[in-house]
Length: 248
Image (cartoon, rainbow, N blue to C red; front, side, top):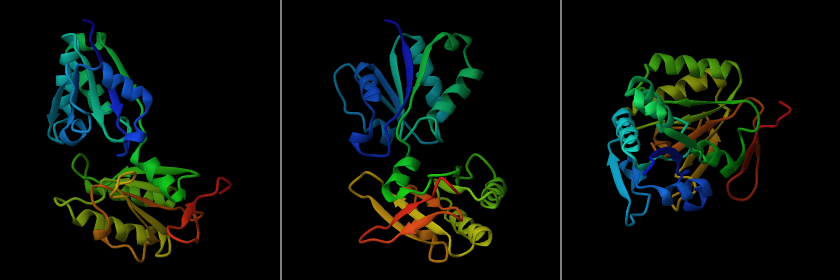
């Protein structure tokens, strides 16, 4: 049996947001490797072994997947959203670069998915319709000083900003400080979007201003978007529409 490794994105939550390409890879796989909640999104079936692990074991997980593929398994490494956005694709290549030279001979592919950032943007319109940046607010792998520097520079450049991992139980103070920095840099009237569990039955969307925002409005299932100076709101019944014109 000839082994291969495919690193895939399962999208933000809804089964309808898994691409046909990823679905086909999962049907061919002998092994699925990933963080336990993402592995559990893949239905069990005969001939498929599911290898779930803790969220902070990315490199060990990547090494396991590479070794399984070297041994002839057809391996799919799963992430939520897109595997190249704060997810497992980078971890696999980090392990590949530092690990067994034989791993470099493997057939390795990255199959894109719909990111939480893009799903959240679409849920309210097009707030990322012009220049934007994406920042991970977790300081597990980088210092808070770097996060704060990037927040200020992105605001100075007037990017719309998308934020992953805004607030967890282990680091509740970080997002509070992020909101303070954003108010200082952008002003209190800047639009902010809290998009929680997009595309799932628990989806909740809130569009307010930075002045109204509080830290408890976000958790690890929330994607936060802050608009640029040009971002506009269109009032209507229900959730308003938000977009950033391309002419800005």
